[in-house]
Image 1: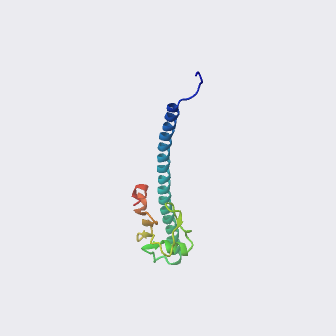
Image 2: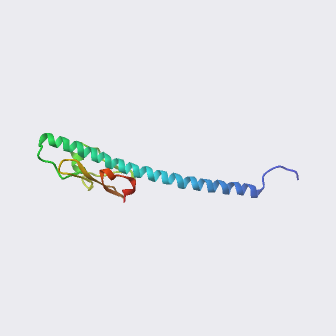
Image 3: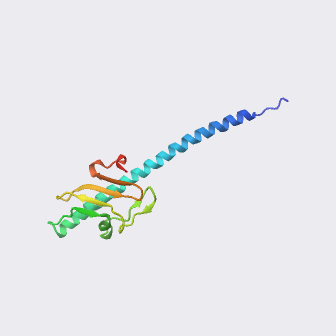
Length: 136
């Protein structure tokens, strides 16, 4: 009976330890994925801001006295200033014709507020305060 090997209790202990470690790792990876999606959402809002800035600059060349108060995602897309926006939470492209995303402008033509409306989340914030904790 001097056979060397592991007992059932030792094997079960190893399996339990591995299960605990994997549960912790899965929870941590899940949070990292969510943070990446949130950062991607803010990045999309910043892209909208830059597209609106380009649109306003272009509009000023054609008509210096006419600065729109609001620029919609639909307008930016139709005029070729932005590609379709992909919602990082669902990986679906937002339809410019149906989506209510917009950029509010000051009277001098600078961006006041970006409001990105995704399928599940919304971010409406002044461009100086665009952070992941503002996503609702």
